[in-house]
Image 1 (cartoon, rainbow, N blue to C red):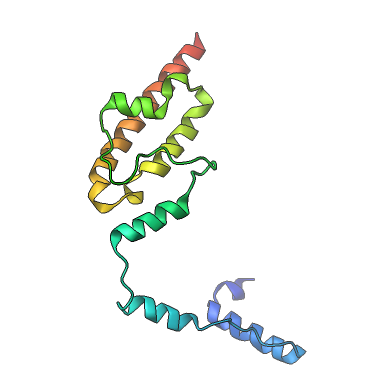
Image 2 (image 1 turned 90 degrees about the horizontal axis):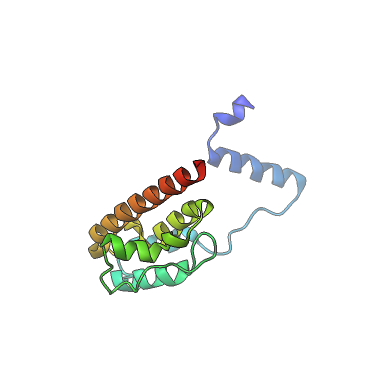
Length: 148
């Protein structure tokens, strides 16, 4: 096993192809030339605007990690950063202790700075910080009330 760990992927593929030639099996095929596709993408001849890429990304994302729709507002509207507005958006007042992790993931899926347009990243970072603070406070309050 240790001799396999030190080999690179290309040499393993070469050995597999050589073994398939000995058995008489057909050589593996690739349906089209992946290298030419990669060259075309990196050539600069294909142009996609940031807005079009963001729209495609949001459409492809479609739902959260639990299959739920994202809770964010449309990308062109400024999202609120006030704690009261974010608390309403999170729905913490009706949440159970088991729900806090799901609420955090769902909010992050829709609002994380890495998932929004560049001009909205600073606001998204503030929203994530406020949401995490609110969820942590609600979690501590819920855990404290269960101990009594």
